Amino acid sequence: MTLAYRHRPVPDSPLARWDARWKLAAVFLAVCGVAALDHLAPAAAALALGLLLLAVARVPRSWVCGRLILFAVAALPFLLVLPFTLDGDGWDVGPFRISERGVAAGVAVFCRGLAVGCFALLLLGTAPLHHTLAAAHKLKLPGLLVQLTLLAYRYTFLLADEMKRQRIAMRTRGFRVRASRHGYRALGHATGAVLVRGADRADNVAAAMRCRGFDGHFHTLATFRTVPADIISFALLAAATVALVLWDRW
Image (tube, rainbow, N blue to C red):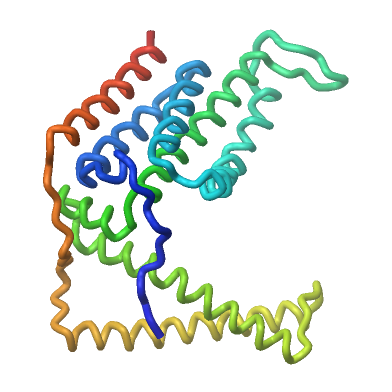
């Protein structure tokens, strides 16, 4: 069974040609800046900046929308709760009072969450994950952490395929998911079988890696070369992030 990487084709764009080390550093700085925003207008501007960068990267719209929905769902509770919990001027809707300050704060959090999602998708959509992690290692991220991330990424697909085969096997034997004691027991046994098989496979992979001379260090054939355009792009995104933070504070 192969443990090959799974990643979508990367469309050609200026951001795809951006040196992964400078791109990772710039995106990390941008995410930190966006997370520090408090007000609605700078957060909305950060979201617009993230969407603009995704458009420049020529990432397929369907791929972006399907994953931004996950970030939107994660930020939705703030949008629903803050208008009813913060004090200030607002509107009375039946027995509830909606705070204008709470609405602004909830929308700001929602925009921040989507903006962070845009920058994360920018990294995933403009370079394969293993290339980005190799760049992170070049930026002094510990090799052990890079190795663990790569293995977790590979085994996510492996365990998903294993669970899919297990589900097909159970359905061919007439099993249907029901809220009953038998249904819960069967699902528990299936999940346990998948985890046990995964643990056995992990032992076999570890033995195979040691036989091939694995020494615990991260090695890569990826090469990186800095050109003036990489530095200029980093400076532009860093300046935009600083401008958003200053706008938010002042």
